[in-house]
Image (cartoon, rainbow, N blue to C red; front, side):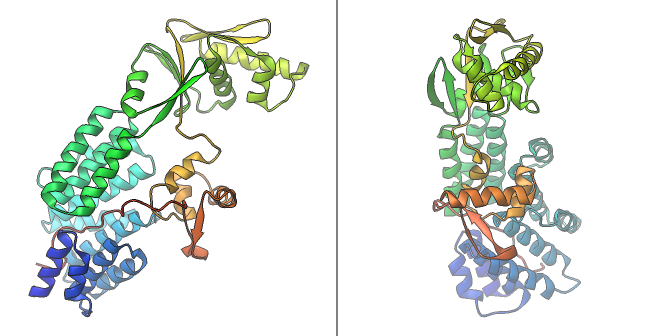
Length: 406
């Protein structure tokens, strides 16, 4: 391994892509191409980074299996940062197996962490958690431990475990300090700010206020009857009922919960559940049927009683009824949440993340663009979507260890 390659690799390890490029920018041998690709990725030019890493993988000879596998891992990281969620996961698995077979445990662990981060991004928390449990972070260098703890914190936040998320971020902060990479420290700080930001809204008796994740966790563990509009669940301290597949029943439950302890008129319930402006006899009949279904579903938690003008919710055991709502509620709130992460998303990647069709995503994006809430750049398959806001920090792209074969 020559001195320029070694120096460039060390520059990348400490988060200095310009220093790395100063040493290898004019070289076209395989190790230099790989390092140039990682440097361009750290600078945010993901298209050029992908091309350089692919050239490097082709340039390495058949006997340099470890170096080629490391290039595959680097390309997978670039694909994740560019939200190319359709990138073949089998290639990453094969690269990980090659790295393990040749004793490169650090890069193999890194490959596994990339797959976990992808699963977390598309909301497959059970799979991400299972794979994370099988990964031992103790032998990892400081930079990789930081990434590992960020993933732990991300899963904990989605599971509404504020204490576990905060502990993971403290560990990530310590590891980032040891790594000495400014971009990693910035990611940890960004995650910390996310943890402290409002995670939901509490609506009770007509009064609304924002809640941070600690307060959401405390509310879900309380004795209150909570109508959770984030997960479409009605729960108290003893049991929970999911209404995720029954939108009409959930709309009725939420309306009754927001008005509690008062009742809700039939006209209001018809408008919320069926879209009708006035409750005629057919609407009233349908409302009675749906109210009966809701009463049967919620029987362990609450009663649904008829009043002179409508219906009222009557908790069985809970002292109060609270609605837990998303911080922002509009038709395409979930899509805006993905677009707000600072990265450029393709239509196909959003379809994978939202578990819907590309055509549905395209229609939603066009509507958001017309409202000034989303914007695109590029054409055809290269078209990407973002929010008009400027991202705070770029995602860290760092392949640990030297790329050339030892």
